[in-house]
Length: 434
Image (cartoon, rainbow, N blue to C red):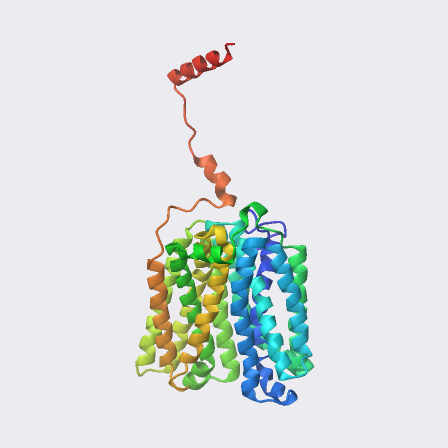
């Protein structure tokens, strides 16, 4: 739905700010995916082997995971804007260093620093939304960010493949540096401080101590296990589509893009549903959808029928995540408002930590069967559903700020009887006596 630049996603988050936060969250996918097709050429230019080049991706992911655990609690103590600007500035420097790294050792160190600094935008962006909105409004904002998050992993490798032929792998890494400059400029110009001084002071340890609440842990489990479904699909999809199903590279790209479009569409629909529905109920829709699709995928992988039918439950499994990720993030961070930075840090670190363990598992049986991927996705869906079942049934969410005025108009005003009026007049006369 078209909106003006002054219109807000909630009462506190403008569209411009939400777009900036979405860009901050998309830096990591671009940093991960844009240069993948250049691995062979990088090995030649840097006089190293494929394993060493692969470590540049590992270094980035390690930095991304560890950096969130640092920037989140620091932002709880010192505010959001300062750490975000520092992280963005370091990201620019690290990204430029990756583009001009003379050796594999320098590149590895630069990628580690690049991942750690890129995490600032991800973790603090979530915390900013949690500071400014709660309930349905926060869930809507997170769902709208998912639209960008769903597109970035698709656009990044395609864009990288096109740019590598024209400007080489160093040029592609320099393009990531340009995105980092945009992140820094957006952070400085648009993202305002969302955590006032009187609400700060939760130190590194204190912030993490607040995360033991059942509501936070169960909502985080729902989010992390469902995110692992997406990562299992992404890592196994090249083999499943091209080797098991037998489609070509172009058809694989189209199917991958179609599934990404399903995720974007469901995220947009989730945002619309959250105008009236509680985040807890929207997550329930996604969990039920994910369970049905994953079990259907597992059944098709076990049955001796044409593998092309696997594409159907895969589409619905990926699309279901649009109903889960945004609202589940809101439920998790709503449970720890005093430590939104630390809460956001653990959410992000757990997502990428579990993903790094899951991605090798889906290929254990080799590239000629979809059963490992189907089994992993089904198991993760069951774990996500179990985590969702543990989320406490809270009281009905407060109306979002955009609808609070309408709700107030609908509340009947108390009517005073004549006796009440007489009593009020008597009290008033007594108060006026000297």
